[in-house]
Length: 242
Image (tube, rainbow, N blue to C red; front, top):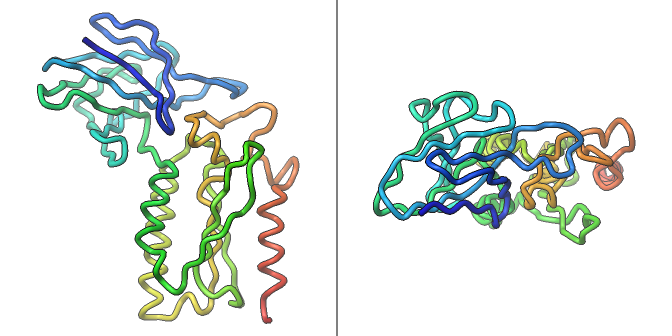
């Protein structure tokens, strides 16, 4: 028996049919045009191979899907799993009934919290709330370094909810700065302001985010400036030299 679900943070899938080949398509939701993101969990109670075929465009990359056995730790399934840009295959083991698959390596709020737990005891770290979303969700803001430093850097990600891999890059960058500070004192001279999820509700809902109607957050700096990020930047600049 095969079951497909997406009732978890970041989940996104529409089941077309559950036959010998499982046919699926990504949920576009409130994006104004086609986009590629999908993320689902499959339960299979027997050892067998299953072919997954997507019916709405080419949405399987050259390394196949990202996969996870617990929904937290992810890796690439591998090029050997790719049948085409629209399909992949996976063999389910007898002792592994549930496997998660996604277009790319997901990064949810739980991943940020795990990262924060690793660094929160450092004296150079302070956590704040940038603002609340229209749904009342707190948007985390991480401040790393000397808040009165002469130089301030701002990193913001997930304006498009589905573009997750940048968070892993920024984790690595911040970890490097924090560790390097012990030797060089780098963070005495720089303060880093990090907003991991501009569209945090979309990230947790599993939305595409690209071309979101009525407003795409990646246009926050063109059509109407993001007031919360702008206010945070202006406050930091005003404090330089105090």
